[in-house]
Length: 474
Image (cartoon, rainbow, N blue to C red; front, side):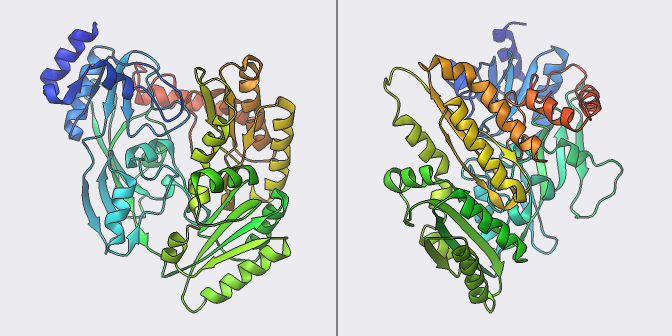
């Protein structure tokens, strides 16, 4: 079916103001946060679950591919069209429908910005504790589909730990609407389809609404920033902190190369040389000084050179304790751009996402540095070190043909580092199109390739025609 006919039909279903086939608009919604770009027939902007269902029914009848999309802030290619089809944008489904303090939940539409939800919750002394680096842009639906984590993951985990229920639309002839889970934290309604859909990257069902758990903001937050001469010193401090029975609320690190460029170019109120570690512990006002002293003592045992302390989150924010971590990715891009010899060529920057047991972080970093030397491709390092989540950032220039040819092999070897150390090749960014081979290696290492067969069968049950976000994950 031609795109002109599809657009006209969709306009009849939704109305002309909710369907756009303008070339620039379609290109904008066919691109992710890095460099994955394709093209769709049109972009639709539904305002209700029922409208999503109508679009899906039409697509199913006419064998048209469907691509649900939040803010497209992901970086593994899971939100961009891989074949001709319809992008369903949730830009206009962004209502916060209910916040219930007594029962500790919030009901939100899929296009709700996570920052908007937390701004509203903060007024009540509450928070939603999943906070990806892209928190200003990321939508709840996108975070659910990618299984996102964030800086608070050391204590609070990822999206799968904070979703009580979902409303989804199935890619079938009826555009079936399912309501899964509910408003209670405990729920044993058979197989847990809610958790199955979380992290499925829009390949099983279209998430339109979510019931989220919420929690109180910390009464007091002890935060320490330290700068270490080597990454080994920093990672040893991390292990010692975890052994001390302190449970960090936030535990993040950034390597020295990125620290330097962040302070010089991007900007940071906190100044220091070497590798950066920030640790926050939610505590009581009476225990804050004791926790701060303990954290500083551990850091000094591990050769820290500069230490900053704050007794509240407001103080830590005001003093810029998190600036370096939050600016890690833009700082890496600036560092990469400094080496671009000809502005007529493209710069490719890629963020990897692996996890290892925190006790294996020293070994992982050592092997990553060896890979950097072996391949001759620059790499910076940062991550949510409290749960062993590492984010190597790699880059090369369009004219560097040899590096471009070796790039995929390097990415695979990075994933193998995690697998070999008992970790995983994808922590929170998902599989998309870039990690499909790594997923196979993950299950090969566990002698569990049957798991992939089961996943393919699940995909067929949910999506018999293979219309929903094809080419992703499997």
